[in-house]
Length: 389
Image 1 (cartoon, rainbow, N blue to C red):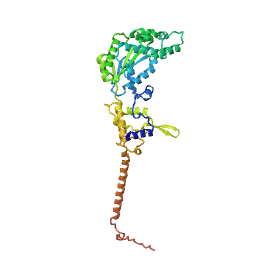
Image 2 (cartoon, rainbow, N blue to C red):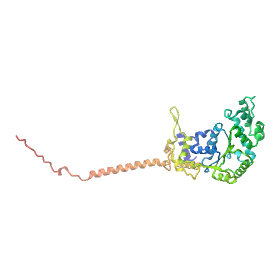
Image 3 (spheres, rainbow, N blue to C red):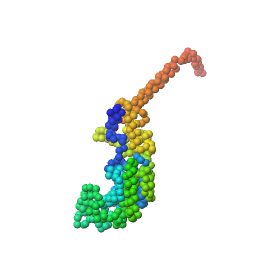
């Protein structure tokens, strides 16, 4: 291990930051609401677009948070599904199981499976007509509902079911997709929303096979206008491919890159220095150990977030080319390395010494100049006045 990395690890442990600092790793599902930096106006714009019956494209520059936005949006919509009477169907092409050649049957299988899974898994009884709902999920009143739900969920989750197995549990799964979705809308007032995420490195063959499957899925079906909606999180390149190979009316929402302040906010939400205190650990602010100027200087909208973060890390390592006792508690990008902090103080001290010597010389020179003697001064003549008698 080289000197710079050793010094960096020393500083990181000193201020109580975790091993992954300063990386911005992919946010885990359970941490999305805590760590994701939202833009409320854009989030509301996407919600409004879906609720206004538009098929929507949310377009990102590659490397600027499409995956995190997709995960976050899917999570909040699943929380709201019962109140909003929607069933989100998630298809993320970043997941290995979706990196395959697609066909219309596979798409239909995923949609049907997700519909019945959510109808069983969520508590819909207070929101829906019970007769229609129980009929849809094949529930008979002779069995306790919670017992039926738990047994059915267990069967569904043992393995990913194909349509044939799904039909054994739910007779309505035998219906064609358009018939099933139209029934959900008419009888239960539920809309199905398809959420797609396309990573920037998606194989072209996978993309083209999926577009062909999507086209087949719609052209051979007769959906009610409000029965199904789509959200596509993608780059401009993939958005253009969707438009080119299956032209439809999309509402396009372009997401601008995060500002330097927003990226620093990502750091602030993820990293809190933890210092040993008198009664346990004390949580400090990130700004007390790490300057925002690192992000400001590295930010460039033509780069990706990961490239910006790497530039920050390189800058810190460059500064760590010094002795351990020269590393400050708070890092600041103002110097090329922290040796300059010590040398800067020395120069200041030397400058003050020179100024002091110059002042002393000026004083001595002034003292050495010939001065007018007291004897040369004219005596002061004081007149005396006699008091008149």
